[in-house]
Image 1 (cartoon, rainbow, N blue to C red):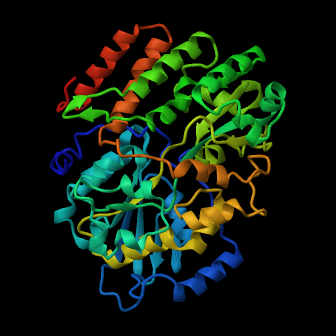
Image 2 (tube, rainbow, N blue to C red):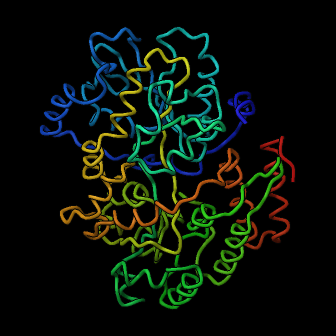
Image 3 (cartoon, rainbow, N blue to C red):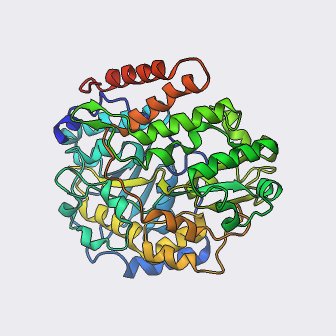
Length: 470
């Protein structure tokens, strides 16, 4: 598989199916108060490895080039990495190392195109021009995992045994065919069902998570509740695409088997259930992120629920906009029919970096330091990749989410994460998921038969991936 990806960095057209993982639609600002700055100064003397890349004795490169698609990771480094000093919007300093931020938005695949074209020049680039560290989103992580342009973390001195508190699924998706761990993440993105509290009280008589869960505990119950909600004037979801990832995360086979496109039975279950819901007016068939899809962020949109991880409700559902449900603390969270995940951001070391020690220290500090990760949860409402930290936060009576009406949702996130099985992920998933939803929209809206929609899907995939058949 590795050879296939090395030659495909520029020719692949893999569109990220979400707003850049965790933050394109509203990046968390982090914390920057005096206490945090004081802590950073203290930590810079005591945290990280003994050979911190920012120390004076370092003989490594003096320029650290980081490629990202938005401000989120830059904010994390600025607010939580000891010793980082911001120079301006595009640069900073760590000791005597200049940090350059190359930020290219994900729209129209621009981030990957820019990153790929630069990686292809990496071998012959001057030391100060080489990419040292870059980010990859869950939807296309395999593209870089199965590539020689990313370093196994063991070559940096990081073994999987050094990361015992991280959630296993974040490792599973970042390993190549040989089992080498290539990327590491500071966040985990377990998904839950976010429900409209006022709608829950009106229709079901209670907005308590444990009560609402009884009405969405499995797909049969969920579909029956859709009928009840419709009778009261609510759509259960804004779009049939809202629960697609729950189904696609719970398949029992891969998108591609021996070079042939394979549609798992659970995906067809989604198609059949969605068609019925659209036909009965229980939901729409809108594209995610469209204006019609977003109407449910507001009370007049009359939408009962959305499926997603912490970043969706916190940063992508208009929670900072007056009049929205989130602004008024009107969402609640419960497990929903099945556990799933959506998104996430992985940190990669680019092959050829002349700053391996500093790259290692950034990775370790931002993904294993429990105190820092707990601060990220408190400051940013994020869900971090540290199991002990999240388990403690789940029991913290002082922690709550304003957007979720004072609820502490951590325990509900935790319930859905340990059972995740990502063994069926492939490097074709991003394109297949995107084209499948696109083709089925025609079926849902009555513009094509199911067979015609499937044919449209197959043709789109073999055009995107000429090495596949169906």
